[in-house]
Image (cartoon, rainbow, N blue to C red; front, side, top):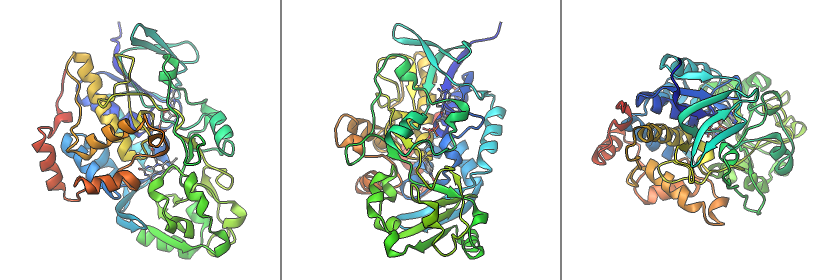
Length: 429
Ligand SMILES: Cc1cc2nc3c(=O)[nH]c(=O)nc-3n(C[C@H](O)[C@H](O)[C@H](O)COP(=O)(O)OP(=O)(O)OC[C@H]3O[C@@H](n4cnc5c(N)ncnc54)[C@H](O)[C@@H]3O)c2cc1C
């Protein structure tokens, strides 16, 4: 008879991948269920790592023992040490090469991948999840579960709170909508708000086909990783800054210029621009969107499904369900997803063993972000904010608390002083 999975992870974005690696390293049999044909979710259209406080967080994770995914993103960086307005020492991974590379790594690590499988229901027994259910009725049992389904989509949310489905990388029409596991288990999710009191937020960047830009822009991006193009006066819309998820990019420079980054695609740091308008700018005469395909009209809507959890990433009200990434708070970012995912995966195995769960201390930026974001979720003001090491209010807090550092040795020492060096690297089973 086949052995039951010990840890079942729902959602294969960066958070789910982080959880899978941590749980596998801790010795568990791990199954990762993903509704599309690609791992990494929104990570297929992002690419920015190590900007501002994300550098510190990446090095903390490496010192804690969650090094593999950061090694891969560093290895596939097209550019390193890039500065752009409000951001320093960014690295930009290649969004085209990243997914197959992570997929191979997970498979080689012995993680069982269940692709194109959408969880649509949950079987609950008392305070525990017993199994998750796929559309054709197939049940997947597990001992501990991690929800990492993100907060983007389904199409109805993009229609109600945005400009309709703009055909983003999550491809709900083809693979079916995101499903909230906590909601299916009978719990109530939180919804993030915008400054104006509306729900959710537009994703803050879109992607252009590099070959659709002028040769001059292509050359600049290839050489420097970044290009800043001044917008004509009539095209400056400062109010658009309030629409975006990524408050770390809600700076005047992002309204006054088009800021482009080379991630394999050309990342345009604004939620959307009508194509006709874009094509009036020199160098963009033939511009064409590749994510979302409807980038001339709108973008995906995020942050409509956040679980209530504790600082150990366990969902409140269920004994054996953990959460990570955007599902676990109003977090923005790949680094934030891997950080929370690694802790959730590690603690899933601690729960399996009946051991005390790990809470990262507030002396580490990772521990502070997880606890700070959680404490803010109960306030009106807190659910209008977003939490990222990369900028806005949380990065300011990191600086004020002396948590920001770009010295890997000092960061490792901080982790060692907390007694946590290599903690994720030890097999628990
Ligand atoms: C356009 C854009 C650009 C971005 N750029 C950057 C960047 O450059 N740098 C950065 O750090 N961050 C960036 N971000 C933010 C970052 O990508 C996200 O915050 C982070 O990757 C979220 O990871 P996640 O795993 O929590 O969620 P997601 O990436 O949303 O992954 C969730 C996964 O769960 C799957 N899923 C959902 N429901 C189910 C179900 N019922 N059954 C099975 N599977 C399910 C989904 O298909 C998806 O693959 C960007 C975001 C966007 C939209």
